[in-house]
Every structure is written in structure tokens, then in C-alpha cells.
Amino acid sequence: MPSRRRAPERRKVPYLNDDRIIIPFKFLDLSQMDHRLDPLDSGGHLMKIATGEFPPREPRPEDPLTAWVTLAHLGLIEEGAPPLHWSRPQHLNREQRLEAAREVLSEAELLMVESIAVPKRYRTIPARELEEMIRTAPDYIDRMWAGCWLTLIGWTESPDCSFRDLSEMPSDMGGELEETIVEAYAATIGVTSRDDVVGWRRVDESYETLLICHRLGICDAHYSLNGPPPYENMKDTVPLGPGWRQVVRIVPDNTQ
Image (cartoon, rainbow, N blue to C red; front, side):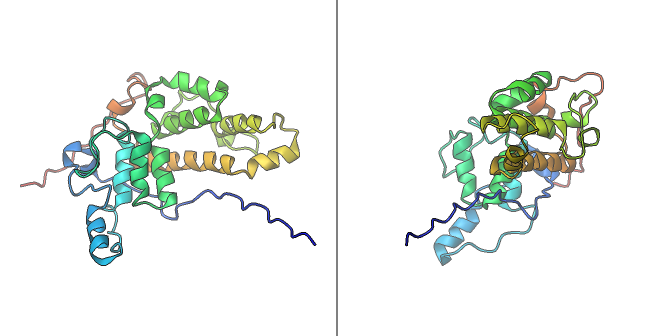
């Protein structure tokens, strides 16, 4: 009697139990990027060489996850950014830097960092063009990254944003920005009508849809805790004008 084949295990989006990372002020000053901001946990690697295993993770906010979130927030997971460590090659692109992050982060933590580290090309596009990309780009990946960046910089919280929020949408749908991205993914698997109940159930339960929603949720939570990236990092998307202001954080100098 032929044996039954097992259905392939469905991919699961790795959720982080504790994803509320607050970046310390001192980390926002690039001159402070020394041993206090160690994205590779160099001391942990030395302990592993000596003892065969990593030591317990340091308490937040000094752990590698906070360091990587800071680098992502500041747009430093890109080619041309400061070196990660003296022992690493100086010129690493985004993918190579994320591979370095994989050495010290869990899969869920890496997803969080990757979502905040929106690829540079999207961060250089004006907001209205990004909105148009979200509505019309044939590739849902382009739409997703455009949506992540507009969420990270606070555009989606402003009256300038043309997407309807959750409260203005039908009860069985998410916010318009999220739904527009998901619809583009649905089209790639042949689901083009909301009347296709079976097809939309397949879309709603898919790994890709859950990943899109989780990335947008990560960016929304990060913005609510840490605010937008430095203005220098987002000026190409949102020029200063009516309804927008630049905020400078002033903190006590305790170095003396």
C-alpha cells in the first residue's frame, strides 16, 4: 500500500515576544558608536571561543538587538556605512550586514531589524511618489517597502497621508495602505476579486500576507516608541513645510 505523503509544513512568520526596543539617546550620536554599541557582541564571541558557548545576553539596552535596531533606525545597514567591527571587511552592502546580524540575532529579531532597515532607494523617494508606488507598482515587494518607510517616518500619522486608516475601512478589512499592498500580492497568485471567497481565504492565511502585516506592525510600533529617523535621513521623502517640524533632543552632558 503506497505511503501517504505529508503535506509540506506551512512557513510561519517569526514573531518576537519582546519587540519594544527603545533606543537610548546616546546611541543616536554617531560619535558614541564604540564598545557600548557592539552589534556583533564581540565579547560574547571571545567567551564562546574560550568556553564553547555564548554567555547569557546582557540586559537591554546594551544587547546586540538594540545595537542593530539603532543601526537600522539611522540608515546604517547600507553600503558605505561605518564598519561593524575592526575584524570585518570595511565595505559591506545591506545583505552582507544583515548576514552579520544573523550571527547574533534570532530569526524573529533579524526580521525586526530588517523591517526597520528599509532599503536605501525607497528612503530617497518623495512621499507622494511612494504613495503612488503603493497604489500602482506591479511588484508587491516595492509596495511593502514603500509602506514600511512611510510608516517609519510618521507620514501615515499625518493629515498629508491619503490612505484611509482602519476606522474608515469596512469592518472585515485592515487599513487601506495595508490592504493595497496585500491586494498586489493576491494578484500574483491569481486572486483579483474580493468575491473570490476561497481565494481570499488563501491570501489571508498565506505567509506573505502575514509577513507584510507584521513588517508594517513592526514599523508602526518602532515609530511610536522612537519617533522618526533623523531628519537628514528622511529629508528626500518629507521636505520641511507646513504641518511638519524638526525636533532636536537636548540631554544633560554627564561626561565631566
